[in-house]
Length: 241
Image 1 (tube, one colour):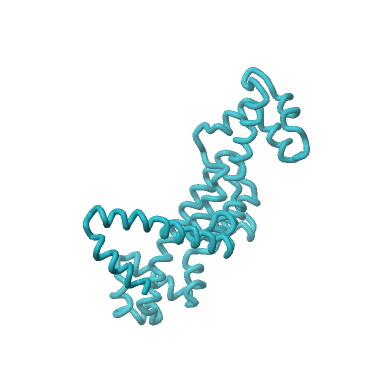
Image 2 (cartoon, rainbow, N blue to C red; image 1 turned 90 degrees about the vertical axis):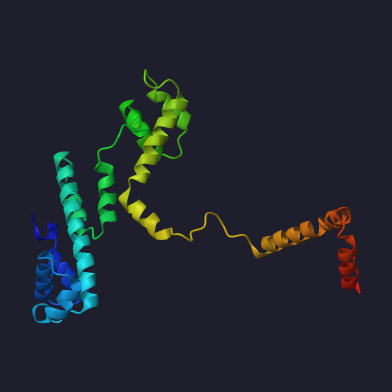
């Protein structure tokens, strides 16, 4: 494995994140692994950790757990892809450079063993070349191209195009770069579609106001039936004086 295909140790990454010495991190990790608590280390083992404070130690403990889980998952993914015979140097580099578990999963998604999907059924029917051609040549007439892929498993052009669509949808959903970009651009406050203009919002408010006004006669008729008409009428007369 070349230098570009290596990953820093957990202690080295923690030292960079906390801006402290790697020896300090190693000492703190050893104490944590031995079962010492953060308050105990912060108070009674300052001389061992180089005076790491409570906040630094808590961050170290959280990140230590996360990075170890990340490395374990990375190793599992590498082994799985290698067993499939699909592990390239480029793919290995991308996995070793992944600094979050989510990124590892995004890269692994196209290689993850999956149940038999509609896209897989379409591939087995020989429709992947159709999907490739429709993607590469968007100006062709889809029905004419699909007619070339009819057979026992594909009854008509509609079925062929449906299968090609399933293949393309699966490809997009498994594109690690596209998934990462869409995750950054979306969020809890993301809107779908354009924001209504100021003029439209004003029309909506005016419509609501007119709806409230138009319901007033019904309200006065209800007052007459229930016997509260005199008091309501008095308030109404006072309002118009």
